[in-house]
Length: 240
Picture 1 (cartoon, helix red, strand yellow):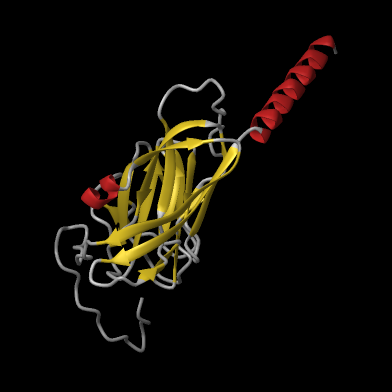
Picture 2 (tube, rainbow, N blue to C red):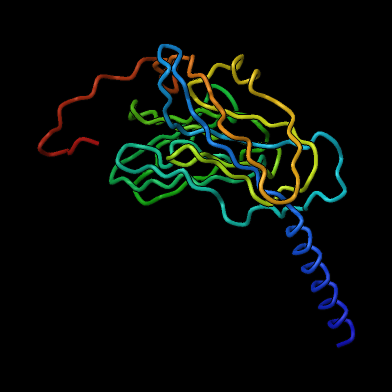
C-alpha cells in the first residue's frame, strides 16, 4: 500500500506540474491569405503552420506519443481531409469507405509506400517515420490526391476554412515559424520563414500573405504512366 501511495503522489505531482506549465504557455494565432501571382485577390486555402524551438528550453513540455492514429479516409473518390499534418513517427490510417477498391500510394517525396488494392470497409496503415511532405494518390482514380506533412515538432496546426490558424500550449521562448501551402514554391516558402518570440497568453502574428506561384502538374500512376481513360459503366458492373 505504501508503494501504491508513493506512485499516486508522484502521478499527482506530475499532473500538477503539467497543469501549471500549460497555464504559463502561449497561444500563437494568425490568419493566412493565399495570393495568386496573377491577381491581387486573396483567398482562403489549407495551410500548415508550425513552430520549431530555436534553442534548448527546459520548460518545453513533454508530449506523449499519439495513442490514436490520424486518419486519411477514402470516400466518394476523394481523400478526407485533403491536407493532414502529423508529428514525425505517427501512424496514419487509410480506411476505404467507398463501395469499391482503392490503391493508395506515394512514390514521389516524403514517405514512399504502396498499399496495394484493398476492398471496401478495410483499412491499411502507414507510419510516417521522418519529417517531410508526402503526396498521396490512388492508382485507380486519377482525381484523388492528398498531402500529409510530417513534422519534427509538437507545435503545429492547419488553417480552418476562414483562414484562421491557432497553435495552443506553446512554452514561452524563441521559435522558427514556417508555413506550407500546396501551391507555393519551395523558394517562396523559404522567404516566409522567420523568428518569433512566444510569450504567455495570446500571440497574434496578424495576416500571413502566402503567394500561390506554382502550377499543379498532372501526376502519373504508380508505374510512372498516364492513367487509363475512364470506361463507360457496364449494366453488370457499376463504375468504381
